[in-house]
View 1 (cartoon, one colour):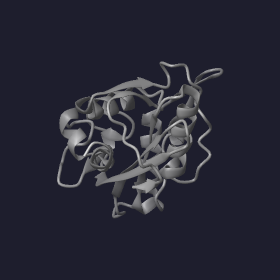
View 2 (cartoon, helix red, strand yellow):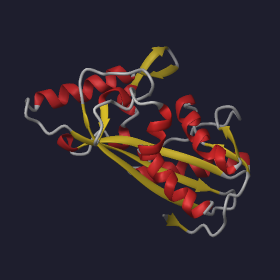
View 3 (cartoon, helix red, strand yellow):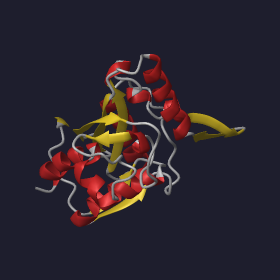
View 4 (tube, one colour):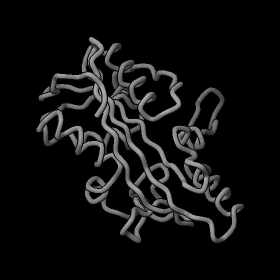
Length: 212
């Protein structure tokens, strides 16, 4: 953990600084046992701040602080992404940007299959013996309206597979198999994924500090 927070969340309401329904569902499921009522930034109509950081920590703090200030409630932000060893750690903090696509004028959407194809195309250009090791990273940042904050970092190592398999996940889940498993994240039951994911690793640290 980093940061200067000396308080605990306890129960009550917590703003989840995301407009991503899949991410909200995962985070809510992990926090439910601790009596937290999770509200999404999207449901509250909060604007999405520009993610101008160059690290997962910087971007998570940007989102958490913006949500806490706008809502005047404690806020939790997740910044996560995929790093591929053979690509020098890319896409990294730009994981979501690789999935950007304009579906309609003025309405940006994300095309994850395009993003997965981009990663695979770059790996294939490097040759059939290219290292396919990768890892999902997650940073969870809690911010309070008065400026206090805490940061927790998690990681799930694995490897990339092709073609995409499974329908249970989101993002790059269909091409990522965690170490020790043959299934992709999108083929693993969500309850199992919650136990082994990068987000679960970060949450274990958050829970030990905030609710332990």
